[in-house]
Image (cartoon, rainbow, N blue to C red; front, side, top):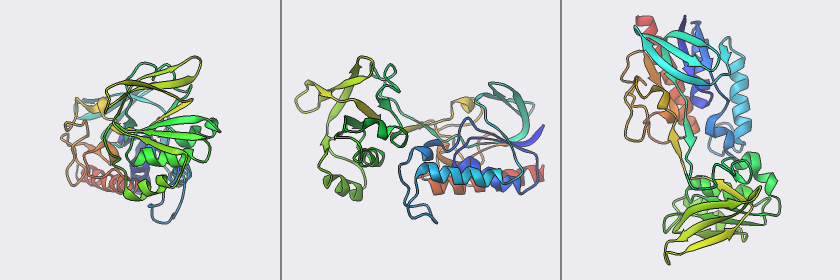
Amino acid sequence: MYDLIIIGGGPAAVSAGIYLARKRIKVLLIAKGWGGQTAYAPEIQNYPGFDNISGMDLVNKFVEHLKKNEIEIKEEEVGEVSLINNIIEVKTENNIYQAKSLIVATGRVAKKLNVPGEKEFFGKGVSFCVTCDAPLFQDKEVAVIGGANAGLVTAIELAAYASKIYILKGRKELVADQALQEKIKKIDKIEVITKAKISEIKGDQFVTSLIYQNGTAGQDKELPVEGIFLAIGSLANSTFVKNLVELNEEGEIKIDKKNRTSQSNIFAAGDVTDVSHKQIIIAAGEGAKAALNAYDYLKNK
């Protein structure tokens, strides 16, 4: 029996783990992988102490710091969480763990287009991770789906490799920060296509093109590309606790100012919650806050 289990491997979970390890209680951190969406960021320029660092490098520093503490870690995927007589039970692919309390810090998962060809060509031209896959598209034409910050950052990263980058956006205008919009205007190989609705991804063994509907003319157009990077946002990774805690309409876990959920011994932190602004520094801070409040709960019990 653990005092507390943390589920997650991103900034919120790591921060919670570091804080709770110093409290000398029995803690288990369960992570399927490390970094969450932070690991996919090509460069981060707004995390204090690092004027410019890649997402993966920052994640490595987080994990290195975490593992310097005395904390038990299991790299397993959580399948189900249940509550039995006010005891938390966490089932993974290999084991069942029990605890008096829980911190959910599972972040978000990338949205999908849900169009024909997306699933079939994932890893064969379709990617969510520009940091991982950009070098594979040297001198090739690629498409980036998404006109918010993530889409433009993806396109800028690809400009070092691809011969041509198309940014396809469903709306009439880009919604990214003005600084990013100004930056892509200076890169000749980037072309923006607005009011484009993706309907299919085509290919043979690998992606060869995508089909989109032109919002102005209402006609299907085929765009020859060898790579498609999806940057259309994300969803809260909360399904495994949806029957235990209250969620908002977007599937985010509702928390109060002390990171408490609707269930007294379950806390939540980071991008999986309804906290405003999904940022690395906010997630890390929320992880620390959840840890301290969960510790207070245990102490008072």
